[in-house]
Structures are given as C-alpha cells and as structure tokens.
Image 1: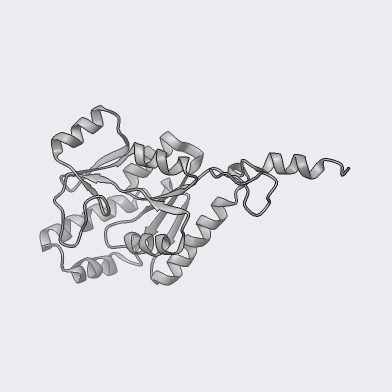
Image 2: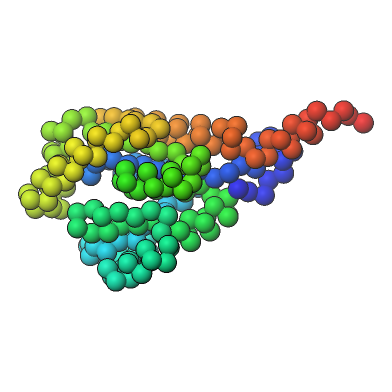
Amino acid sequence: MDSASPADPHNMKRRGVLFVLSSPSGAGKSTIARMLLASEPELSLSVSATTRDIRKGEVDGRDYHFVSLERFREMVEERAFLEWAHVFDQRYGTPRAPVDALLAEGKDVLFDIDWQGAQQLHQIAGGDVVRVFILPPSMAELRRRLEGRATDVQEIIDRRMARADAEVSHWDGYDYVLVNDDVDACYAKVKTILAAERLKRSRQTGLIGFIRKLRTPAG
C-alpha cells in the first residue's frame, strides 16, 4: 500500500494490515494499543463511533466519534460501518470511509474492538485482518484492575465481569492469544506479531516484480 519501487527489497510494496486487538475490559488492550501507536509510525488507529456520553479527558474525533442514537442508526442504514455492535446498552461501530482512506495512503490500521467486531471485520476483509486476543492472568486480577480504575460503580463492574466471561469464550476466533500478566512483555509480543504479519508473502504485492527483475539476465 505504498509507492515504493518493486525493485527495492527493503521497502517493497505491500498490502496494509488490519490489526485487531480485543480483550475483556480491564485486560490491557487499550494500554497496549497506545504503546503500539507511539512506536509504529505506519500504524494508524481506527476511531470508532459511539452513542455513549463523552467522558472527562476524552476528545471527540480522537478517542471516539460521539454521535446520537438517531445518527448511529442512519449510519447503519447507509452501510457506513465496517462493523458495529451493542455493548453495555450503547452502540459502537467502525466508520468505513476513514479506514479506506488510511489504506489508500498505505497505512496499517489498528482496531480496538470486541469479538463481535473482529468477526464482522474478518468476514468483510478476510486475509488482511490479523486478530489478537489478550487475556488477563486470572478473573480475580481482572476484577482488581477494574475496581482499581475507580471509574465505574460496583454494578457496572459486575456487568463487565459477566461480559468478560462471555468474551473469553470466543478466544478460538482469533489468530493469536496472549496472556497479559506483564504489560511490557505482552506489548513486545504484540509488536513481534505485527512485524511478522507485515512480512507475510501474501502481503508482499511488490514481490513478483522484484523476483522478475532479479531473474532477468544482466546485460
């Protein structure tokens, strides 16, 4: 997805990666996503649209696109989403147009979405999608992290824990499954996965041209 010459083996043209990170709330995917974005200039975050209220410190268009329920429904009717789902009485979806624009620029796209979104995205984009699921070391530790954030009342934490069990049951719908018992170690593994997926032969669209040139007799 870039303009590099097919004769350049170190910057060969390739298709972009649609890189999905999923986890139960509190297992660390958002933290790892931020670390990945800070270290990978060719990776851009897909900003989801949501019907939930904006929280303190969030910025519209950076953290989410905050829209009304009516507007969200209109976008569903317009097929403006690559994927969308209900989560805790709210709706979340990935706008299609910004992702298409990023891919046209030759960028990889990071998705911080749940298993429903990952499944829908894979159905649409198939081989360009790489799905990574992040597990907590234990459910007790997950609850400790959620309570430590002090952003939700106990009722919401209990609902998140119930949803976490359901989310973990879909672990086998992912290409990679990691346990986040150490955020730096888990981040290093995620970064290694991204690097390896970028190098897959199936994504190296400039490889055929390079090999043809390589095999052309000199002179």
